[in-house]
Length: 329
Image 1 (cartoon, one colour):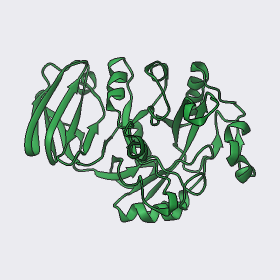
Image 2 (image 1 turned 30 degrees about the vertical axis):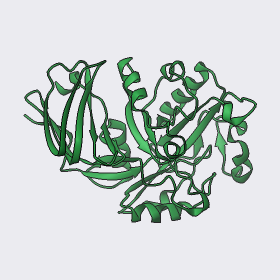
Image 3 (image 1 turned 120 degrees about the horizontal axis):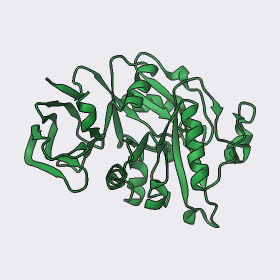
Image 4 (image 1 turned 90 degrees about the vertical axis):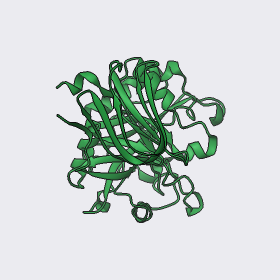
């Protein structure tokens, strides 16, 4: 019996889960972002402007979903921002109209407060850079119906000690496209692997973090998360995100992935390498010039497995970790 992990009968929305507009420090309006991303085949954009939640649901229609989101910063306040360790997290709201700021104070809103003070509502929690406070922010967000993603850990100067102490995350951003272009440090699947190996059951995503400086497209259209839905609605997109029904890619697309008789079967865009990774150093490779169909035995996999598809142009597609115990259900 086939158990589909990436079901070809679903519509796989093309999504950017990290975006900034003129509502914070971006250079384009939400309407302009929608127009440009739709022109590049996107169905979904999370409008994750800094510190302030905005309801952009007017942009949602039968062809496009505008996810309500925000990027929070939790800083250790060094003398210079280049030395400042921080935790940046995206919060994705279950309710598209929710603009109430959990785990937030006027101080946290910073320079954006004066622009939006008439609509800024918060619970008054003042975020500080401690293990306990970071986890309290995430706990409050989860209870209020937000999925929480850890963003660009290398740019944030986060160490292993930092990210291993965080609880309640939904996902790790394993490619922040704009920051990767700027610093060559923000493609970080090894951090995802480290977290999985040490018991963190989270998903992995990619996003652009586009600011469109000078109204140009630098840092756009490079970190895609493909979300499987039956119909393009806010509830369907959010529900699939919540259940992990997605994969992410900087290039090749995965068309189908299923397990049958302890064998993993993959169909994808032409690839030169497909890697099945499991706990610690357990992995399998399939090499070729134009791989589009790969079958790999799951024998030897421990606890979980995930797939990486690499193409000849440097693009990488990553699945989430799939747990063997869940496949038995």
